[in-house]
Length: 374
Ligand code: AQP
Image 1 (cartoon, rainbow, N blue to C red):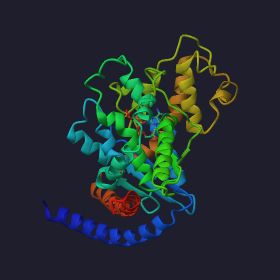
Image 2 (cartoon, protein in one colour):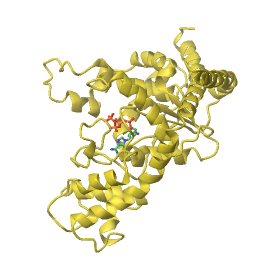
Image 3 (cartoon, rainbow, N blue to C red):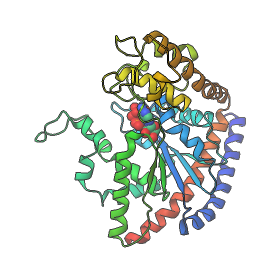
Image 4 (cartoon, helix red, strand yellow):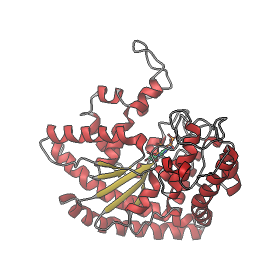
């Protein structure tokens, strides 16, 4: 290892150790009386974060760190990324963890205001997951829409396909542990995650009841007005990082040209008029939703409002592309700048890991006492 790199790492380690000590005492106080509003959320490093992640959740992460008297914790949930099938190759996962941190910093997550960390580096998440697995009914997990969608094709009396793994079935329990280990009260997530959050509340309730302790608060969703951003190539499916076709999504690192090309190629229909009709015209509705979310407007108002007089899909796509380019450009430019700051990005995560460990360990101590392991 080159001497310069060694120095950076040893400085980072010393800083992290010091942070751990001060964070441990802070965490002890926090555990005794959690803040009234504690924010927690996560993103999977399964690829580059996209416009749907940004408009549905991440934009709000940035706003929430500026509200006073709160604790704000954001996680790159790499353990969840292991549920991907086929598995994410190790080098891709390593790069995605780093690049997700870079994107989060680029869009304005400030390590002075928030704890930004890597989930797998905080063992209390999986320790609590086991305890929670022991109070979670199989029936609850069977009802999860995401599981049903993936398991859907197999009849009830046959074994699920080999591609369906326990990790995918149980991952909502790990998600509950991610939230409850920080005793979070508010979780900014896209609409697609609401069912899992409801499950986290059910799990918290049953734990508190079984062990006669009021340990876990009931976490509430914090939603944005941008509900679910759909795929550009199939407007009936949500925009997704792991979708095989990169034309289906706008990555937050895409160039202006790539964005414009992808929006020009978005699936719409043969009607030239611009109307808000999500049921019958999902492609047009998705473009209007994108425009509205970027400008903070109501999509239904656009045909008679800001986009009045726009006729033809090419013209609509041009307007949407301009607006998306303006939204993505500052994030991408900062992301590219951070490409030259690798050591800084690593240090932010290492320091965040230490602070998160201290907070999570304090809750884990309480869990062990509550269940009788200590
Ligand atoms: N299409 C979307 N529209 C609005 N919000 C979305 N989110 C994800 N997709 C959309 C929200 O982004 C946050 C981070 O998501 P995640 O990475 O933790 O998991 P995900 O929901 O599984 O995201 P992807 O992009 O679809 O990833 P893959 O392909 O790996 O499964 C969450 O708050 C989510 O609600």
